[in-house]
Length: 275
Ligand SMILES: NC(=O)C1=CN([C@@H]2O[C@H](COP(=O)(O)OP(=O)(O)OC[C@H]3O[C@@H](n4cnc5c(N)ncnc54)[C@H](OP(=O)(O)O)[C@@H]3O)[C@@H](O)[C@H]2O)C=CC1
Ligand SMILES: CC(C)(CO)C(=O)C(=O)O
Image 1 (cartoon, protein in one colour):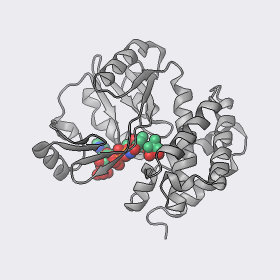
Image 2 (cartoon, helix red, strand yellow):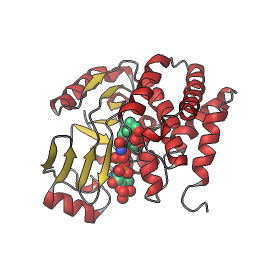
Image 3 (cartoon, helix red, strand yellow):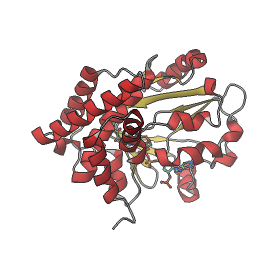
Image 4 (cartoon, helix red, strand yellow):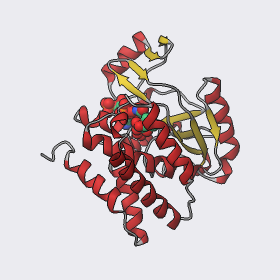
């Protein structure tokens, strides 16, 4: 499902052209707008975070019976947006580190393999979360059920608040951040986010998060984070849903998050319409 009718008609006619390390694959799919969508077992919300509310509202007619909705988007508050439309027991949330770029008009360029970690938004949804894991693994997505998925979502937000924001400010792919300065700024954002999450009772795993950051710096050197892709295409970024939500939570808890907040301000200064 998409909002762009021209793109939908190309995808419907020619399929999605997926380029990965094994070559090019053409995947035929039914492509349609939300109003033409058939009843579904699982809806995956994969817009940018600022479009979550409108996208999920457009599929409200699918939120019946046991139909579930899963977000693997970056940022905080996407699952909450889904839960305004779907019953909380049918909301699944998680994160992914699969790196990919949209290759217009109907292509996707994948830059290496990745994983998915997902869990239930409400304890009543844990069995459904397991079924979603099995479904994604039938498509070799490297999915795992994570009963502490809120911590994983905050860890991903910390990762993105550091690397996506820095990469966007510097106009450099991930490999360009692999300097002592880049690592030090990323480490400060990670520590600030851990402190904010702790005030909400969320225990982030600092060692795991630093290891993921190291892995990205070493292995995803050519990847342009989605925020940088948005900036280069002249689109608004997800800065409010990532750094912005961390800073908002820090303020609510009465603690400082100066590095995360400064990166947010620098990214906002370059948003479309600001200059
Ligand atoms: N790219 C990556 O490698 C990764 C991305 N993510 C996260 O995944 C999410 C999606 O990212 P990505 O795929 O890169 O984003 P893109 O911007 O490439 O794709 C989002 C698509 O959603 C469309 N869209 C906008 N509004 C609606 C709507 N109301 N209904 C249906 N479709 C809509 C957009 O259309 P239009 O272009 O016309 O606006 C666009 O085609 C983001 O949260 C991102 O941070 C997470 C991990 C990796
Ligand atoms: C690909 C990945 C995991 C790292 O940059 C990402 O989340 C993004 O690009 O937004």
